[in-house]
Image 1: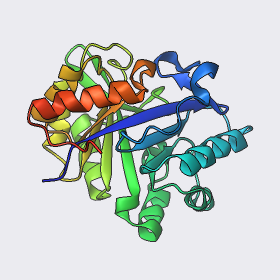
Image 2: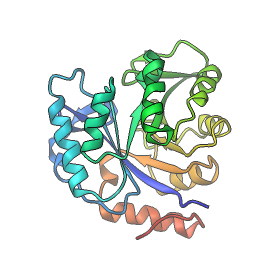
Image 3: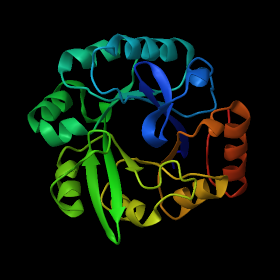
Amino acid sequence: MLAKRIIAVLTFDKGILTRTKNFIQDYHYTKKFINNSLFDGIVLIDVSRNKKQRSKFYDVVKNFSKNCFVPITVGGMIEDIQEIKVFQSLGVDKILINSVAVKNEKLLKKIIGIFGSQFVVIGLDVKKKKNSYNFFYNNGEKKISTTVRNWINKVKKFKPGEILLQSIDQDGSLKGFDLKIIKKVRSQFKCPLLVCGGGGNWEHFVEAFKKGKVDAVCTNNIYHLTYKSVLSSKLFCIKRNIEIRLE
């Protein structure tokens, strides 16, 4: 059995780290969080409105790649093969795709054909209204005009290396992960499932691993981004019989 993972998801606007709720810039932490070897991976996402200052995000990726020794995934505004090659040259291990899967299926197929499906993580950003779920793209601003079932079936055909399920509603709430949608998505994919949005304490992590049967829990709240807190979360999981890397 593969060990479960705890992954940091960091969002950047014009090269500045943001808090995920409403993408508020947080200058204090941009240079602070670099070398936390206890994380099992890091996801860096550019949430800038345009690419006018894309070079600043390249600098962020280069800095993390140079100073971190865990797998790095990069996402946000990836629109062509050449840019993926740039990220590869900077040391990126995987790319996160969301909008491309909606707007340019031909490009996604080409990416998979060139780099392989294991290189691709497909993001599923979900919102809940009453008892109904919908998937979104473009930083959660645009709804995908099909049912959850139909979109899942379409994504399955791409055979992605991993799925990153992000709850937009739960993001920043610290109220726990949405286990209902997690279980629904988990039942449809054989590839590793990463979940993000809502983790507020270590028990939420355990619930996601045990009840949701996820492969990785992603956290992007600033209070988690210290060696001590990541160690605490892992020790908590180990005491509850969850296999997870500690060294």
